[in-house]
Image (cartoon, rainbow, N blue to C red; front, side, top):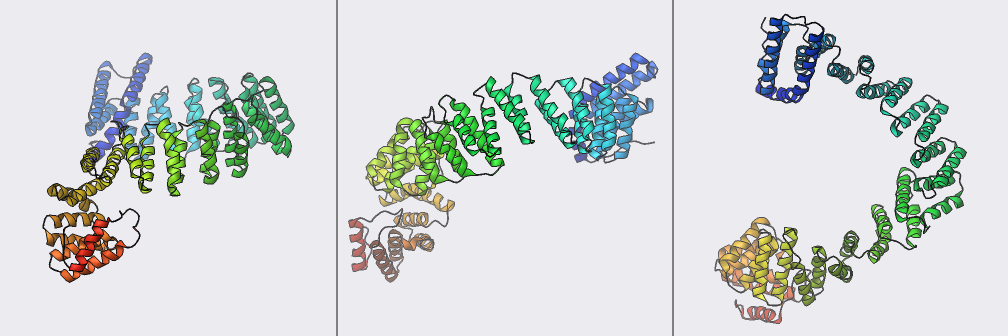
Length: 602
């Protein structure tokens, strides 16, 4: 009979990953199996054993090598020698399972278990197979057998707990938990699970006894005693809960979870004044440390989110707490984070300022206030928020950036220049390259406004060192070079990169058209100036005037005059945001073009 199986290359690759990963474990299992069999009585003759071991080890080698076809043949040859070889049957079952032959795989796996009943891994694999099929009763039978056979192993018991839960056999869940507890010791998780099972069986007495025994097991751990009180409270035993909380607080007066649970007791009893007084005892008491108060507020927030989600109640508590003297900014920061999460931005602003009053170096709080100021376009507030940061957190570049921009937009060029100069001095190798590049780019713009062209070009060069595709820097650098009619080849190269990156940007198209104009490429310039006009350029006096100049040099003089007149009209309107005011010299030159219907460079 020819047992050789043929598979495609991809199937071999998939199988290789599965079998190689479990090879070491299964080899040791197989070795243990053979050792056990030899100790009892080897059913094979010495010659048969030698052949069987040789072919089995060779099959393992082929499998790890990736030659799975050969491995499969060798495993089958092992079965020809010894049909009850457990390790071989196990490997054959793995092949069959993967080849979607579950009946053959299951049969081979059951034979492996029968052949080597002492092998933990074979049985676990069989039980997991049954569980995966949804055959819970078969899986339970195997795991129960394993729990008896391997009493020191946790895995069978953990699996039984899950399976009995799935089949809603709560009594057996408790029995399995008892065995697990005997093996691994009493724990909160086990006791709480048993408590839940007893409640499901309507055995309240045993349920409470379980938690009581947990508290007795750890008498010096107030967490378990408090948990017992909570269990009482949540299950209608309010007086027992109260007495338990008092017991905890008599032992450890400042224990925060018990203080909070006692407040919950008062709340549940409808004793609002006592509830509020209890919270005040925790949150407004100078003798309660800050960490305890923080933990209490966090638990209150958690309970609120799991309950009524009343954010106004939590916000009111924060307001009361923050009126007291604060030992650090932690409580105020927690309050700010909560308010921001609840989109209560207006209420968060004074809290964020309180954070900075306590801790001026708190960058997250300052950045959040800065975000609010930017969103409201409040430039004065941007400056007020950023100014102290330059002293307290001088390495945070964002504050220089936005403060300098605010000054720039307010027309305070000197102040803006001073801030950006300080900012670039904070740039290091670890600084964000994009931010560093923008710093130098804006610094270049400011230097140009101050007519410090040498410094401006040096700043632009630095911007491009940090980010060679900084489009804004490339555009401005190229445009200012064109205005001076110098390095026009370099300007054209830089400007072309901006147009390629953003082909519908009217400003970049205008820059490129103007550079081509200065280089005498009038026909090409007209193509790009037309595109600039179609992409918002018709609203800019500078772009429209450029359009007139380019049309003039292309022989369309009447059209050029129309554009010059349109530019003159736009120049009389208030400048739009982001555009520079035109100088008196530029306006006179424009009127000269209109009156004489002729282009003048200067």
